[in-house]
Every structure is written in structure tokens, then in C-alpha cells.
Image 1 (cartoon, rainbow, N blue to C red):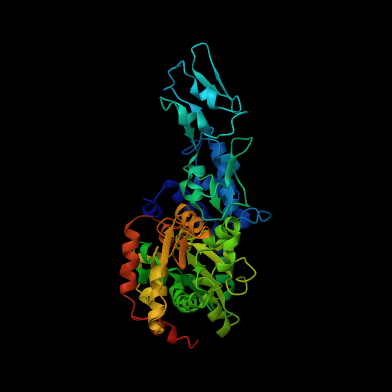
Image 2: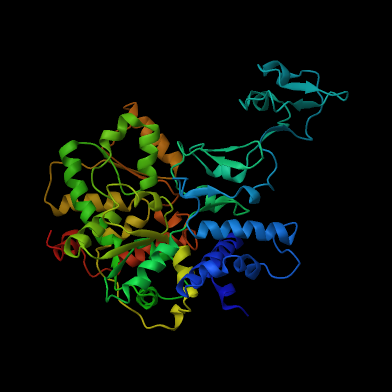
Length: 480
């Protein structure tokens, strides 16, 4: 049996994406990628019988597009989230539709309420909606006594809470980059894998190969604390050893950067009186695009990823830093001018699994390494509420007694929207809003191998295992 099939992913779409990433990386290690690009689709979909689509030709055409995304995608598109048009044609047309529940009643309330004249009736008095006239206001659905009019939204549109996805004339999803916050919710929810995040896995392979195991320069892996809830088939210490087998010189916790941020953010909060968090790049983008009046209140502290990377580069300017985590929005963050000098590339946990297997590294057979750079409070940044707990602790550790923290933690863009809207109207009595775009926090990121409630428990358990019990103890080793 193919050992790769034993890997644990939430969906078959993730497994398919992983197989493409694995093969692209495998050929990159061997310097055979550009000679074998055209062979990868046939390797994943061998034979003449399709396993995923209507015909093997379409199946391989889609796989070819997946290979392009694994190699970096469309460089002209600044967004890291892209649509594979040829793969996006299986969902029914979205919008309001009349269902079989329509009884052909005499009242015709749906017709009366429609200001666009989009509703007509056939010879059986059954209602029909003219899509060319319908503006999807939903009034007809509200007044129908039989609830016979339904709003058929595609999974990607349901997942996108910022309404960045529409359907184009080819019946494929289209992403409005001016609205998109690169959270990846659509990536995880699309049942066809027609929306995906472009990968920087080739850049990481190149960094590792050219480092020659630290002889030319050191490559640091900065791992997100949510790693404690991933790779459940192995032990965390084995993952750390596996990273070094790939060629990473040192593995550092982003949670140590979280400790730095917690201390600095608590000071900024006390000085300014109100802040919104800056740790989640998708949340920051959401404020910038939808609540411009609140932009001045976004914490000026960098994210934990940037904070610890900045420290490493200060002490070792030639070092190369790769962030590994659950977040597709981090792939946007590291390209910002303010972050670019410190972080060289970003990959997800999905891509790390592909890297392990592309080089034949079976982490279950490895000895356990040690990862112990951060406090309990830095590690729990991975789940919703962790940042607020850490800021509260930082205030206590600094001996500040005359400041009352009134924090509001929200996860998922809908909760974030509600909190920000209330605060903008001065009806939310809080002085700190911790926002995370993904439900549950980072443990719900699109780049996770698995998602679920148990992930929160794993993060808390991991936090309790920290040797450093206070934030100041963790940060003290940095001499900053």
C-alpha cells in the first residue's frame, strides 16, 4: 500500500493537493522538475479511467493547473488565493431559485414585492425568476408563504464572509482582490479544490539546498504554536527532528515572538487606551478594507512571526527564515515591505507534510528533538482568547495595577465584523479587540492538516508543558 495514503487529512481534496506538492518538491530536490513537469499529472492520474472528473483529459488538465499553483501560480496576480477556472464548473448556478415547493398560489406575493419585475408565472401558475433581472435582494423569499424560494449559494460564497467571491460569465468563481483578505476559508470549503493557495515550496527547497546544511548560511524554521495540534500520527519532537533532516539548521517557536508581542502590546494598550490586535494578517486586512476609521487603532506591534524573525536577523543578518504555520494570509504578510526584510518564505503545514515525503523523511521513525523557547502564554496564541490572556498576564507581570483590561476575543470574520461595527458606533465597552479571521483561531487555519475542537485542547496542553512559566522569563533569554 502507498504509505502516503496513510497520511491524515480532513478531505480528499487536501490529499490531492498534497500529492501534487509532494511530486513538485521531489523533482525540485533532484533538479529534474522542469524536465518532468508534464509527467506529474499523468503520474497522479495514471491509466485511461478518470477517478475524479468526467474524463481523464480534463482530470489531467486540472492537475496541470494544480502543478502551476504548486510552483508559485500566477505571478501577475498579487493575491495568494487563485481560482482554477477549468475545475470550477460542477456547482449549480448560485442565487435565488424557485423550488418544487411552489404551489402556484393566487396571492403572488413574490411578484408584488419584486421591484425589478424578475418574477413571472407559467401556465401552471408556478413562479420563475429571470436571472438577468434579479438583483438577489431576497424579498421574494421572505414573503413566500411556502418558503418555496431558496437562496442557492455555492460553498465558496458561503465560506467567504467578506463577499469577495462572485460567479463570472463562465459560471466559475471569481475573486475580488479588493475585498479578499486571503484567509483561505474558500480554499478549505471548496469541495472540488477549484480554489487554492499558491505555494512557495520551491523557494523553500531552493533555500535549503543552497544552504548546504548550514555551510553557506543557516535556515531557521519558525513554527507556529498550532503545530502542536497537527501531525497527530507522530510526536511533536519527531516533527522537530524531521525539520532538521530537511536541512533546517534551527527550529524556533513563533510563540517566543508571541511573548515579545504580548509585552509590547500591553504597553501600547496602556499608552493608547484602545487597540485592535495585529497578530492575524487577515484580520488586519479586514479592518483596513472595511473599517478605515479604526485603522489608527491597529496595534503597531508586528505579528509574532515577524517579531521573532526580526530578532533572529538582527543577531544573524545572513540567516534565512521560513515560517511554517496554518495560515494562507501569512503568505501575503511576508511580502509586505515592513516584513520582507525579516521573513524569506512561508509554507503551511500541508506543504511541510509534502516536503517530508518528497525527501523520504518518515518522521515516525525519528528520535524526538526538543522545542522549548516560549512560555505558556506565547503558545496559546494559537487559539482564540490566547492573545487576550497573554496581554492580561503581561500587564500583571509589569506590576501595573491601575489599568483594567476589558478584552473582547472574536474568531471568524462574522464575529469580528460585529465587534468592530459595535466599537465604531461606541456601543461596545472594551479597550482591546482580539480578532482572528479563522474560526477557533489559528488552529482553524486553511493550511492545517486537520481541523477540529480537539485542536484547542492540544494547544492548551502544549502550553502547559512550557518550561518558562512567565512571559518575562521566556523573553529574558533574548536580552531585549
